[in-house]
Image 1 (tube, one colour):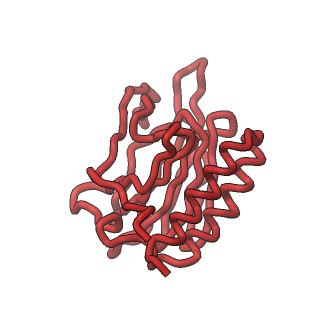
Image 2 (cartoon, rainbow, N blue to C red):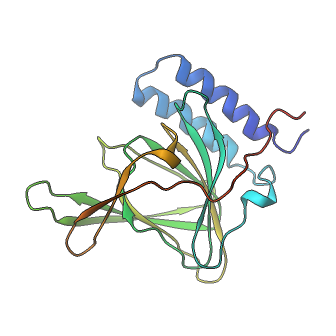
Length: 193
């Protein structure tokens, strides 16, 4: 079997799912089942998409649907690395491939502009979390391991690398617009059997 076969199968099935015009809730159920299968093993992820930078986490694009209806991204976290507090502007799902990831949720109070800290969710290898703007998608994510990297696979309902999103000042709640882009210049060739 080709190393990328699990990712190729995921992409094919997700493409079918987004093409069938399911409600977001039903699409997320399909995505969760497919992501659970994808993260059951880690040997399919090519080494170049499992690299992190010593100064910051990396966001490697693995696939983007040609109509930008979904994207698949590997996040690689060095020891203790974390994101700023941010949102997504689309639905998303995270599955931990290896290591441990923590996500601290925040709510934005539209009246006061303050951030209200919520629960922290700890995800271990094989576990999944999901979010959407309607259900709440403001969080800060970090590698919970102090001495090794963690890798998670993220699925978004758009091309996450080009969406204008916001990071939030933890003390004031002030949002600042940003576009994340991607850490890698190339994507894996899923179609080279």
